[in-house]
Length: 104
Image (cartoon, rainbow, N blue to C red):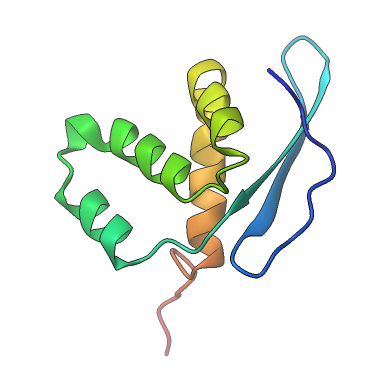
């Protein structure tokens, strides 16, 4: 799996980087650009059954990846599925998901 370290931000896509040490002690760094998920993607996720949620989330994260980064995202989904879900979580948090706290 090819690793990328330097990716420029463009107007529609923002870079997200995973930088960690894997179980074998190897340093890993992946940067993938994503666009903001829209209503279409959110509706698709909402309609997915619990049994299919992982597959749906993987499809969505690949769809919103920059076209030049989509193949790398597919490799991550295949070889490191937990990392794929970390990208999903971080991208959606950047859009406001899970950041609201109950107020007084």
